[in-house]
Length: 293
Image (cartoon, rainbow, N blue to C red; front, top):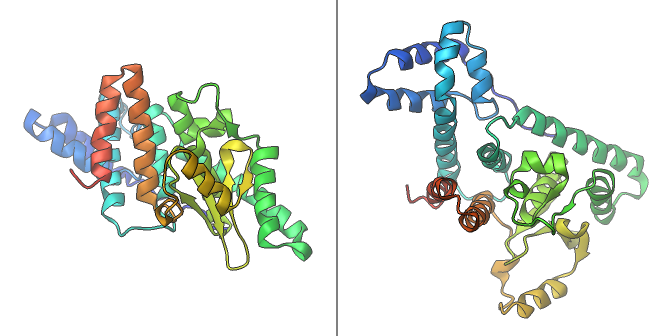
């Protein structure tokens, strides 16, 4: 089982930079903030890093910069993801969805997310081994759905679909409720740990998953209890909503397209709610992903 490695925190280098930040002129503070944001690994909470500084006075004076550093780090990390070659292997997806989650909860823990995904993947792997003699691609899909839907209890939050927390993956793993794309991200990240050929597909209105191996192909709808769909059913869905069922709707979604879609969803939600500040921040990040900044 493959899981994301946790990068170490260069605490001594960061301590020096936080001292520099404390005494920097007003004109230079942003540059130091930017440098700090590029050094703190994305897997570590900015708040925890500051709390681990040895100097108690430095810890106290640095806390007021934590949210700014976090915002700047998100910008920096998203820009790196956007500049990488287009990927459908989802090497950066875990990072991307976690960075989005931090926007909704500045105290979100990546370690907590990672441990949860690792544990669920271990459970799926355990069932694979128990059913080794009859294991096929079709049974792998059924086991994955059994664990995530029946055992873990993930389902679509139809009643409060426009609740922003449905898009923040750390919240989704706590409430077990989400929207199609956030639930799909959990399936993908668990599947990736197990080497399963699971991909997102950018169907309009309703994000779906594609399991695509040489021996078995099916579409999965995590929002509706992991129901399995064939291509014909998906094509009828498109036609019902006025879309020509062309191949672009069935192509494997890239990491960048998934992150952009999550940002667009959140922008629409915050616009409806009148949260202008959050809408503007998310638009900046979306422009980063669109390579316009």
